[in-house]
Length: 190
Image (cartoon, rainbow, N blue to C red; front, side):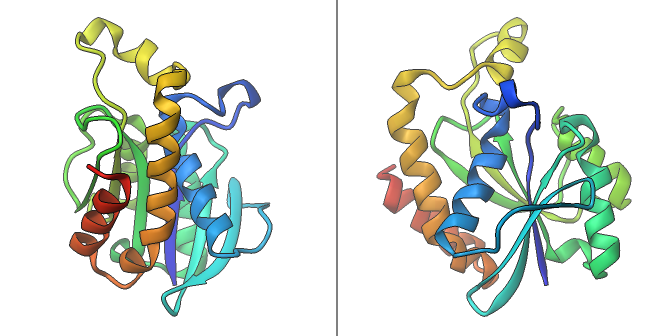
């Protein structure tokens, strides 16, 4: 089983900010691949499905970003999923809007959701799908940028990115991160 966690904040008024692009991506994947309806479990919402012949548990932690690891760890422990089968989909300031990078392990780079996962899983050696939201240009504007909603001008690239991630998900499930990134870039046109 693969455990894919889309990171975000669950408050109703916080569903559309840049920080929730992980939620948006996992929801797009679940929709595209006909996953079960979302239900509450493991301090989050889960949906199950199959992609590229692999069983995938999609998870949206309801613990808020800073405690995402609580939910991910509970699901991983229940299903006995190791770090190499866990993927976090999350916002990334250091990537241009609409860009995607996949990597295994590494530091949290100031991302509180990843920091929480590292702490709760006891390792940073899980996969990360880094979804570019761009940097606002100065450190003082980062919090407002991350917690702010996507602008109208962002809607075209955002929709294209979420569709591309959902379309290319079989490559990710099949353990082909480079092919996944290439496919997403081709579909987005970047």
